[in-house]
Structure formats: structure tokens, C-alpha cells
Image 1 (cartoon, rainbow, N blue to C red):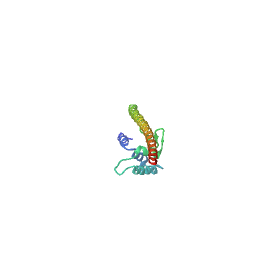
Image 2 (image 1 turned 30 degrees about the vertical axis):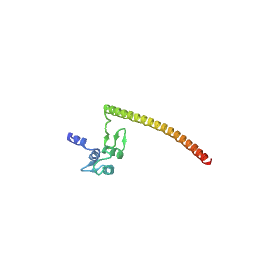
Image 3 (image 1 turned 90 degrees about the vertical axis):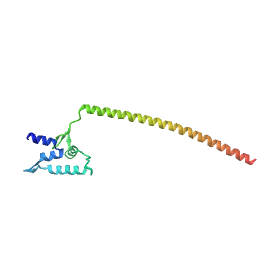
Image 4 (image 1 turned 120 degrees about the horizontal axis):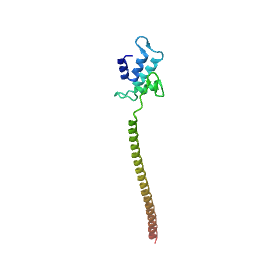
Length: 147
């Protein structure tokens, strides 16, 4: 394969790369490759929204159709490399910070719930006391009218 062909292949997405690898202009498709390619193209169409946004990348589609084993996608070679450790570390730091914020918010919400429950209990006691006073007042008024 010439240097130019290698550069062109690197620039292709995974589905087109699969086609380049398994379809010859002279011999046509390799045995069994055409149905897999058709399935990938169909899935690409199905996962493309009307505005052009895609819900699955070509790499994800290839992995789903062809299968993945230890990072190797059949017919496409090794998949994407894991991100560098520093980007993983920054992602971990962001997630830890977000987790801390959510824990703080949860604690604040739990405290608010406890406070509201205490207020409700105090109000219920007050209502019960007022109901008892109203009952005594009604009894007093009933006794007063009967005299």
C-alpha cells in the first residue's frame, strides 16, 4: 500500500475503511463482507437524526456489527486508543467535584426535610390543643345555655 493510500485510509471513517478493505474494483466484495457492510450502512442511516446529528459513531456501529474482542474490531483492526491518563485524571477530578456538590445538596435537602417535619409536628400539636380548647368552650356554652 502506498503512502498516499495509507493517509487516505487513516482519514476514512470506520465503515468506509471496511469497504476499502473488503471490496475490490476487480473482484467485488469478499465473501460475507457485503451483508455486514449493508448492515453498517443501514445502522448509520437509522442513527442519523434529521438535523444531521448522529447518535452512534461509525466506530460504535462497526463494533456492534462486527463485534469487539480485547479492543480489536474484526475487519477494522484495533479500535480507538484509550484517552491519555491526564485527560482521564481531569475527568475523574471533575466527576469527584460534581459528586461532592451533589452530596452537599443532598445533605442540605435532608436538613430542610427534617426542619419541615419538626414544624409540621409542632403545628399538629398546636391544632390538637386548639381543638381541645374549642371542645371545652362548646361544652361550657352548652352548660351556660342550659342554666
